[in-house]
Amino acid sequence: MMSTGLFITLEGGEGAGKSTLMGRIQDWLEQAPIEFIITREPGGTRLGEQVRDLLLHQHQSAVSAQAELLLMFAARAQNLAETIRPALAAGKLVLCDRFTDASFAYQGGGRQLGAALVAQLEAAVHPDLQPDLTLLLDLPVADGLARKHADIPDRIESEQAAFFQRVRAAYQQRARQFPGRIKVIDAALPQEQVVAAAIAHLKKLTESAC
Ligand code: TMP
Image 1 (tube, rainbow, N blue to C red):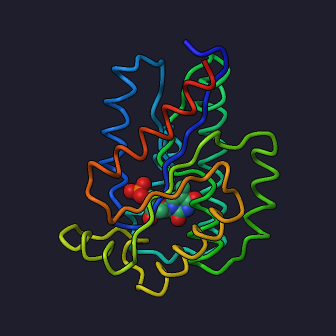
Image 2 (cartoon, helix red, strand yellow; image 1 turned 90 degrees about the vertical axis):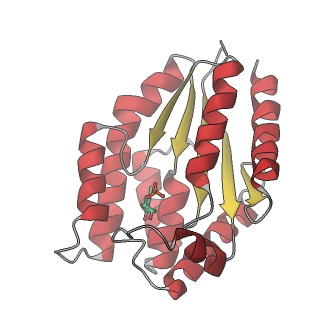
């Protein structure tokens, strides 16, 4: 086991193949062998999953952009306290399906609340903690939406293409700002190449941490 925990997050727009990649990374971690946990945001705890349900699956009532942002951080505060921080303290690798970069992308960019407000909440909720590695699956919006077409969209997935263009632009801005932490993977590549690129980044990080 590693002497200190590692915090890895996975990000990307709609239809970028995040769920498939999560499964493939899990397979790799299991045979590594590395002690790890998997969590997601919004979600990961009982409270967080309830927030997720409120935010994504309750279409009947309007949710203001600010309420959405604050609920994302409420779920995050709980996930940090209950799941992420204890696992890191125990030396485990934490793989989180979305984290604060998603708030910068979706609420800061997509909802146009701006990065400054998201940064204030980040400074309040986890001033001391950033992911060690973030894998960002990048894909043109039209391609992602076409891939998603068969599913029934949740509340956020029901947004228009312009919203997702802003999400993508905000993610790309984050990647330019934090090139050491955020590794952009071209999600238009064949799946095996996407997986290979992700595993190469993970190997580099876990080997340097051992
Ligand atoms: P997903 O985990 O299936 O991608 O769904 C989560 C949705 O929640 C996705 O549309 C992105 C959105 N989201 C935000 O808008 N802000 C956030 O901070 C997080 C973590 C997720």
